[in-house]
Length: 90
Image (cartoon, rainbow, N blue to C red; front, side, top):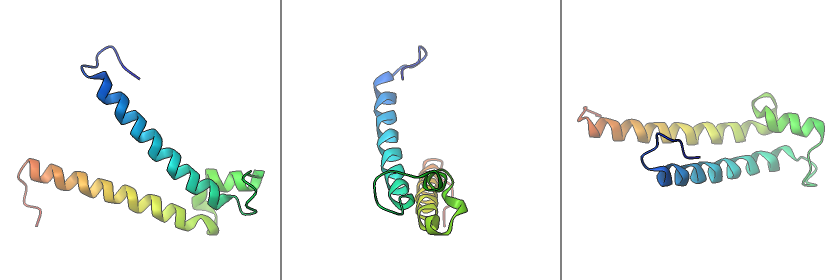
């Protein structure tokens, strides 16, 4: 999506495509884990597990993986910011 006030719309479009691919991969993992009978389709219960993986035991590893990936990204951004502004990161 390109806004009228964007100076570089092509870069934003590339970032959106990357975010979309990341979300698709994350959701495929959640879908596969929620699909307990392995038929590629979700029952109402399985779909509820997909939407709220933090509420069921068999989905906990998916929640942990997503949380660890997010924490890793935040840590990387904080470290780069600290280096950029010359903060002591030790």
